[in-house]
Amino acid sequence: MPGHWLAERDGSGVTVEVPASAANLGAGYDCLGLALALVNRIELEVRVWSRGEIELTVEGEGRNELTEDRENRFVRGLEATLEAARGELPAGVGWRIAMHNQIPLSRGLGSSAAATVAGVLAGNALAGEPLSTAEMLRIASDIEGHPDNAAASLLGGFVVSAATDDGVEAIRFASPRDLRAVLFIPELRLPTAAMRAALPKSVPLADAVANLGAVAVGVAGLATGRYDLLARLTVDRLHEPYRAAIYPQLPRMVEAARGAGALGACMSGAGSTILAFADSMAGITRIEAAFFAAAADVDLPGRVQVVAPRNAGARVVSRT
Image (tube, rainbow, N blue to C red; front, side, top):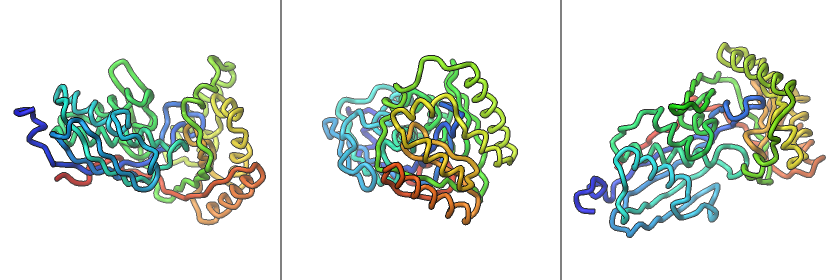
């Protein structure tokens, strides 16, 4: 350990914040994401002589649930980034981590990706910021298995992303000030692995073509300010119909939001959160009432939360 660059950082720390994200946005399966103004703030302290121990405290979402080990997504992102930036870590290094979390777990709001991105950002800051944004996104996407949530959390705004042979290609554009995401966040949790397992190995050609058209028109609309095209983008035929077998309340909740005048409505990520877009207080009020009425009909306890899309991505708040 003496002479290792981390030895000089013993007791130092970094604080980062990272936003939630809604992936897919309907038809954009695994390639579209939107950052949301639900934020996790994570404080990290280097403990070089701790015999590799990890001390974790959590306030808010995930309290008494998140693992205090190296499988924790924040720790995985942190250590993968430090190794990529500076080489192998010494065996004795440990971490003191304090999380202040607003992002619910297993609700399709990118809690896992947010933790991973936060770890990557903290690791890059500790190492002196040698890695580019593209390199950080590649590390986070490798850990997550797909880039949609990670790209939105890291970059902010609406993000189109795709894995390539060289890493991840990601293009972002800002969300308008008056757009709001009306979220129905059920008490029901849906593990991503189970929701992915519900998908078929192949889909009808007509459904694939319909989704291609929805994504092409929807992304062009978002990029040019045509937010009315959210209605087309958020209609999916590749994953939501199959996931409804596990989540039978989904169609009723989505249709309730659309019937209440939402600009678009879909499942957020792999669920269970339902996302509806609105651009006025009257629209938000109608959607909220429709959500609660539909949830009562299908016996789906939950809460409504209205959040703005977040154009700022993950950031380093402070260094000590």
